[in-house]
Image 1 (cartoon, helix red, strand yellow):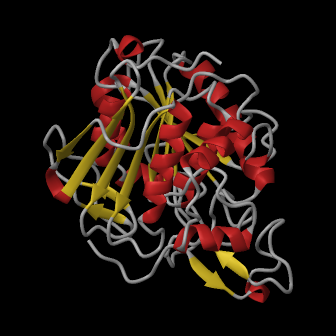
Image 2 (image 1 turned 90 degrees about the horizontal axis):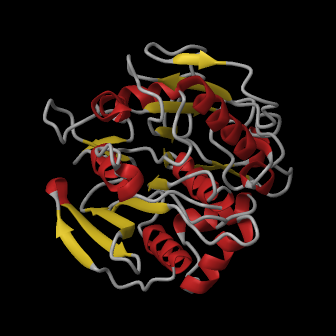
Length: 353
């Protein structure tokens, strides 16, 4: 369950110049947001996945992979899943448990993939405004993948969701802020608040010592990133290990403050629940009494995604570097989004703009 190498390393800038696009200067030093995996670059193809090309202008230079169960009906949901640093689409597909629930509940999956051409450690550039803002860079590439997948699979565009681990979790938060009209729900695994950083130095600060902003200030960062006049917001699950020394647990508190404020609700949970694997769930209901924000705090878990290998209905995934045996986060997230219910359009209202 533990790990020895954090997936984000602080590295001298001279080691990264030429490897990281747009964000290293000769004098500043650099934050190499790595996944701790020493293996080589992501695979060009992935078993069990289908690579999709021609999905748009792709200004972020990303690759698109998809998975869809056989016989998937039209108007099924769509889930976008973002890998962590030095990982690949196939890595997330193989370990996260999401394919099991795509088969069980009936939805399509999109696995965006970045590479060392974008970032020396194959991280999504969540800390770069030019890659994480609406209509720009990697964020726009991911948005274009949603459109392509919806066309390929006939997905219900009211039931599009996004999740990610670590740097992918941080990018998930920014995507939810930039595209609340696209995503009905999100899940941020070991990630950071939306718009926490706008450069390398700020990213380092956010990871290890996140700013203690008021809920209103955090909420304003989301509102300023979204289209003017947005009044409907995604429902957000936040996953965090209490022993995470890479993305400190305080980030989960700031994320909670941010998204409860966006929803216009308080920071006192409506209820709490003890789950398996040492996890505690805190639920924050909206004004109608439905969960708007959920925080899963996993006692003793380090930096990574919570999985629980096994054949049980609530189990999923496989262990690996930054895939930690506690409980199945994909199962709980899918249920929070209403993907286990074919009436989920009623259970989980989607954004309206």
